[in-house]
Picture 1 (cartoon, one colour):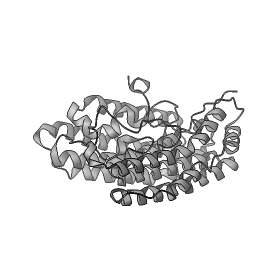
Picture 2 (cartoon, rainbow, N blue to C red):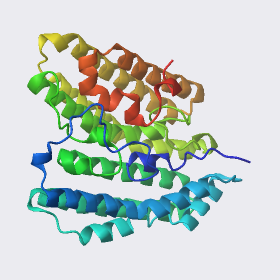
Picture 3 (spheres, rainbow, N blue to C red):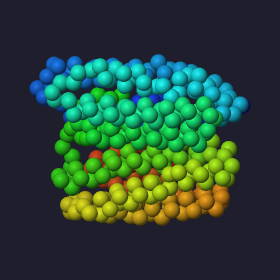
Length: 334
């Protein structure tokens, strides 16, 4: 029996796992001026990149393990334990602690070391859940790992963030955004939403396709297990969505962005209603209603993505654009 092997997909959204995203978006951002970084600064960034490369061997083992056929989800977890799940970032953290940052990157280095330490802790939880055959715990551990990786990137300077292996979309732009202060504030809000909402929404998708795909074993869960899994993310999911909506509502868009701003506000309102209903349908074990709401959620995302102007996409694309979820647009949008 060949079970779907997207079990490790949320690890990839942490940007340091299977490498679903590229570290830099050269087409969208202007390169840092050569005069802005000294040779020592560049050498430091190279050491950071090499430190994160210490996890490559683990990922090669994971990829090899996931390429096999398995009789059950528990068998996949067992194979991942054998491949080193739970110890992926230990060598990365060890290497980072040996690096001496340049004066320019002292604060960035502190953030990276603390961020990877949080990832090590989350990864240990993943390994423990895998060893116990705890599918739900494994998935929630991946959520925590993705959250730790995203939070780290939000705090870093653009140069340091883009030196990390992936998820460059979450990095602070190193180019001028349209819309002035409004554009910068909106992009900040949407980068935060991408870092905090996408990993949590991943557990709500029961399909291996789409920008929020996570585990595909929800259909194998008992109703009680599914309710417990949704219950572990529902309050935080709604709180993150509400905080981002409030931040957007507080902004005063320039005239050129008013239509796009209203479209975004409408998406927040509609998505809030959909997710509230989705959590309710799960609690009532209404599978058909849950599937309808999941489809409605994806339809709303695609409609918003299609409706934003080119300028607005530069501000909100970090959340809505297909690259934010690591999937080509034609996989989830008609």
